Amino acid sequence: MAKPFNYGGQAVIEGVMMRGSKRMTVAVRQPDGEIHVHSEPLDPRIYSSFINKVPFLRGVTLLWDALGLGMRALMFSADVAMGEEDVEFKGPVAWGTVAVSLLMAVGIFFVVPLLIIGWVEQFMGEGIMSNVLEGIIRLAMFIGYVWLIGFMPDIRRVFGYHGAEHKAINSYEHGIPLIPSEMQKETIVHPRCGTAFLLIVMVISIFVFVLLGTPALWIRIISRILLIPVIAGIAYEFLKFSAAHMTNPIMKMLIAPGLWLQKLTTREPDESMLEVSAAALTRLLEEEHMIPAANTDTPLPEGMPAPADI
Image (cartoon, rainbow, N blue to C red):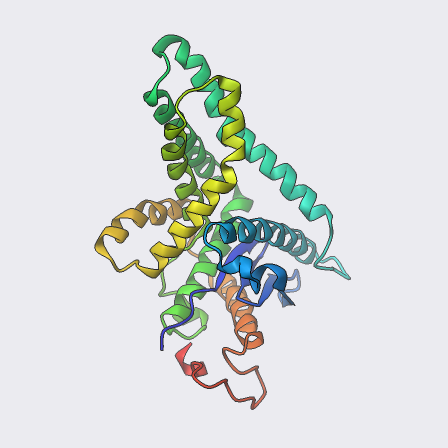
């Protein structure tokens, strides 16, 4: 039986967050070596409403919620990893952090390249090539940023958990048991990765902005900001389509750069990291009734895969 393709996740501090169709879980390694697992339902107003079925619009809403959920998971994991007591998975500060982070990202990767082009146009003139060059600069800045932060020891460890998250999802989708020794055989890349999504955003933005021509610089700056949700919506649909057709030879070529870029944001995880990712995904599958809960005789819903299939 084919596995559903609605599972995804994110690496956090000493842990992994997993998101399904109705619930999310986050597993974090505590200072004493134990694994702390938290779970909660997803917002049904987003994940179970008509919005989740509207092409292009769903990409924007799901991305915004995923950013907030991811930020809360990061804050929660940092507290657990530091041994804090009475840790709670909530806090409005997460949304403020998301907003500030987005503003910084937009400023660095969308506005700065345009300002550079505005200066370069004094010598080369305006035209389609200036838009293309802007996109190349943006892409180079993004890849350079990802490459540079990979040298930081703490980030390298997060990248290891990123690899563990991918191995867990790949194992589940390929029918491999969620056992570290078996999961280790899987690859650390995945076609639905957020890194691939960001690369798609960068590439699509080149084509979209070329269509706008070269109006006054201030108009171009505003257009870059306002069109980000549109580009994100297109990128989401492409990512969703490519994941459903990744055996197609042409699609394999199109998604190859995204898989390559993931080599910069993932590392081969050790067994302890795989244990954490397995704990997060196992709890999620149990709570979404894809497998029976541990130590129970609860039967699976009809048509669901047996534990041996996972």
